[in-house]
Length: 342
Image 1 (tube, rainbow, N blue to C red):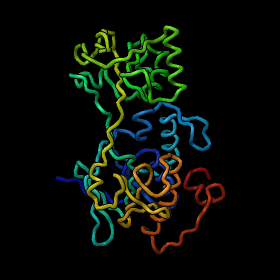
Image 2 (cartoon, rainbow, N blue to C red; image 1 turned 60 degrees about the vertical axis):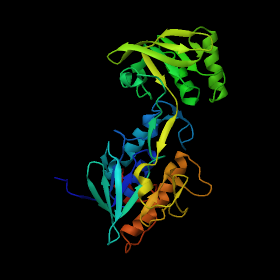
Image 3 (cartoon, one colour; image 1 turned 90 degrees about the vertical axis):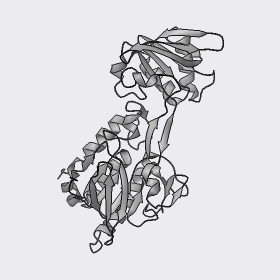
Image 4 (spheres, rainbow, N blue to C red; image 1 turned 30 degrees about the horizontal axis):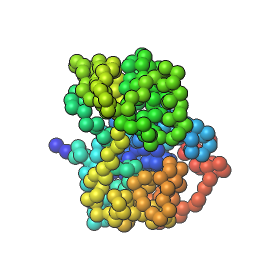
């Protein structure tokens, strides 16, 4: 027996920072939101890939972590009581005769709304699994593709495989906590920023970690817990201890079912205008990294701007006869009451 349909003003697909801030902008206009996300928590890539990595380009915050940003946004939107549906993927979006939409997730739950906002980043994503035989048996126990809580890596023999910014960032962040730290990359050159590479080499020179040019080979352990692994170099096979393995081979980004919704796409991104950030289907908007328009910058702050303009357009669709009076939160007692600060 299927669940009864849920009716709301707006369905937001994606609960990353842009989707969360959209709740705020829509809430100021008295619009109610349900959010659906494939992950098991809010924050999107910020909390899934770099919850403790510093972000430096959020206005007003000289430095803030992905988790802190998410926590702040959740606090900011709390007065509007958004409803979250985690571990769900939207499988279909149908426009009905009355102009509303029926959105259905992969558990068969239907949502009826007048506006759909796609804030799904680059779509659904998953880390690329390295070509190491049997690695699946260790995933989630001693092999991880992201760091959610640094303290869980304290006192371990950590091996990080990769040559990009993520690999170098986590080498530098986890090295002080580790019993031993080894970085493995297939060549001497890196794709990371020079400052991180230089700092890593200083740690190697000081004997505080190892860097091996080679490729990950055979894994050994029991019941999902690694104990050691082979590294294949140009000259030999080296056996090293490892109790935590972090492979950083990039992400596989998939647009997923969005590709079948009849939206105009540009290189797997949703084409939008720059007045409302509306797609080729009226009533469906796309904000954040999932959209494309001339001059697009994939920045969180750009997504925040897109969310603000989208909300104004969404209000006109949902309440076409209601006159919209633009107000500032700093001076409007009405908005301050909504936020619980008056």
